[in-house]
Length: 313
View 1 (cartoon, rainbow, N blue to C red):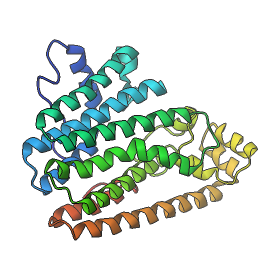
View 2: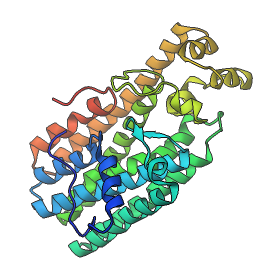
View 3: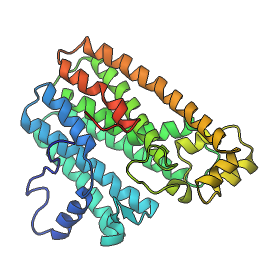
View 4: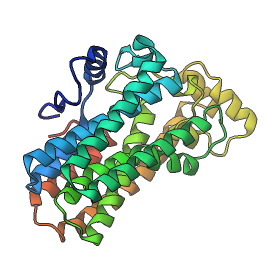
């Protein structure tokens, strides 16, 4: 996805904490660093100083990886990117401490940069992220949740990071145009929702080029966004049969057959295609406010990458 995103100083990972260094190496192993890539893409195209770009890339990686540490522990996920999750390998207590440490380093490093607006916005983003994680944990085992309720969680938990990737470089550069930031906020919200919904499709083996475990969410007691869309209009008995399905063929039988399943998938794609159109409308408005056509071109590609899972060109 571009240059290495594993950027930090010896002050962040001192040699007298060797286990912390090992844990962070594990976190980075196999990760795509997409959020860091996106932050760098925006920063470089608006000519943000290299020191600021590196700080922002480090910040989003620290926050994202802290959330993974906490998520895996809350969910009791045994694996992360095909390897033992940190809580399982290093103990739950250490995973909590490591996640908290990463968030603390974010505040230390951002404070030293001297941009109070950036510190404030980042703190708000972390608050939204944690609120989303809290809400998501509260709906585990709720198989009658709807797409709108899940959207609220995903906007807090997933979109908050994407919004930050788009806006933080402008804040770091002290570009405070309210209309620009409103548009970037809306675009980031959509990108996060598209990413989450596409990731939820992988659970049903749709465009699953990454080979993600099928029905992992459902078997963990979590009805994701596509699952919630599939069960719309079902009776409680039908939903019970759906969530107890051991595999995809059983899912399709619970829905009335493969044709019905495909019909639902097409409907889900249409909903998200409308969201993609809205994203591009916002992007066209952004193009009127900034003079970086290359950035506009690159941002235009993101919907294909995040939802349709096409490789970036």
